[in-house]
Structure formats: structure tokens, C-alpha cells
Length: 167
Image (spheres, rainbow, N blue to C red):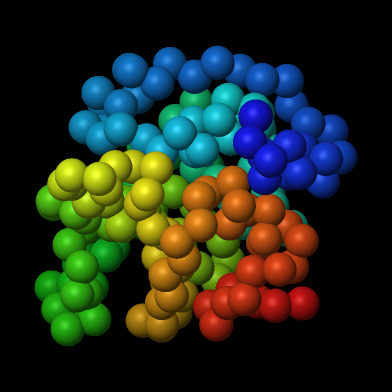
């Protein structure tokens, strides 16, 4: 377990026992290799609770229901594509499954968190930056920390953000 993941486990009141993900199956279904930190996070906290600091839900290929990864990826990107048709200037980056496309991995009442997926030498999924985009505006910011570190900073109020609320 990574240091940020251990710190997250200490912050969560009742950690959910680890559930080994069926990652080769999930990766085939989505046609991408998920970042290692995301897989570790899902394996550790795969149960029904995905809230982080009452701010954010991490989408999971293991969990069904409202925060299932497949359902949310499809719905979020459908809305993004419709918005992009009307305002292409607000979408300077491609959307999954386009090459290097934005792939949503977490949602909140205020924003969607996407990976900026990229292909190429030396830039694998463990180096994908996270783009945080406001839900009711086109404001966005990019963070280069891994998933577990971003969640730790959100949970501890240490993430400096113009999009997410700072309490």
C-alpha cells in the first residue's frame, strides 16, 4: 500500500476490507490500462462507501448502482459530447475513447475529475494528470499527483483548487 493510501485508510473511519479487482477484465471492457494507484484504491475501498471528505465519489468498476464506473463514464461523456457539439471552443481536449481523451474517474456536486489519458513512450497511466472541471462552468484545473495523493489532499483540505470548495 502506498503512503497516501495508508494515510487515506487512517482517515476513513471504517475501512472496507480489500477486494481484489478483476483488473484484466475491467481493462479489456474499457480498452485502457488503469493507473496502479487507482487499482490499489479500488481494491482497498471497493465497498458502497466512496465519499471522500463529503465532497467526492470515486467511480468503481466493481461497484454497481449510482457510482458504477461504466454507467458514469457513458453518461458523463455523452453529456460532454453534446456540449462540445454546441461549444467546441470549451473542449480543447479529446474525450474517451478518442486518443488521449478525458476519462472520468470521480464526481462531486461541484466537479468531475478526469484523467487526461495519453499514449506514448514514458507517459503511461501512472503518469496521467487529473483534470478537475466544474459542473456548471468550463473552469478547470490540472493536477499531476497520483489518484491516492489527490484524494488524500481533498480529504485533508490540502488540495488548492479553484473548482472544488475549500473549507
